[in-house]
Amino acid sequence: MPSIKKENVGEATVYTLRNTKGNELKVSNLGARLVSMRFRDKNFKNRFIFKEDAAAGNVFVDGGKDFADILWQGEEIIEGVKFSATVGGKSASVTYSISNDNEISIKYEAEGVKDISTEVVFALPDIDFRACQKGAAWEKISDEKICPVTEPAEVEMELGMFGYDPGCPIDYLDAGLKNAANLFSPEAEIDIIVYATQDEIHAQAVDGGIALHTGGSAKGQTVYMIKNRR
Image (cartoon, rainbow, N blue to C red):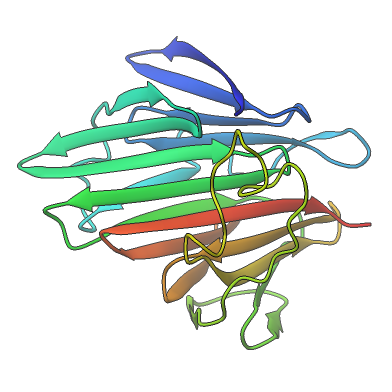
């Protein structure tokens, strides 16, 4: 279980989740947004791997903005922080977690809606995207890529990872997570392996980085595993 502290930022409440390696994930109850991630690389240099603004990661319920600009109810639970909200008879919840192996989990579910999805913007230098199933790599992405996700996750469990840490009870296979995509930054020497329960992932080049969109159902989960290259 990560350590959690919270602070008021304007009308919103921002929660900081910190693992034993000193890496910090910040999330806000305003729109249940992911705000930032401070990651210490193998040279102990702090890097902010998400786009640094008020909404590095957004949540979309039925593709609309009804939930985006409201204050969700925040709750500290064993996995991390859970946000819940109800608008017009539609209910949604989003749970953010960080493990001691630098895995960021976004788990989402809703009632009375067709789909709930998340979009995360990564801002690492010289970032590349690879669709794991096809083994194809692009130096740059000019148009949106829609990649099928069909392969089950094959993860060698290590102490500190979800499913192998009593404080982080999330398991790749039991959750139905599939290996979705890889992001890698040669300059920063950081790899990000993406796992998702969805059947496809959308990747699009944006100003300052690359946006990954997963979702399309009323229940799902996405896990971003952040690794230093060795």
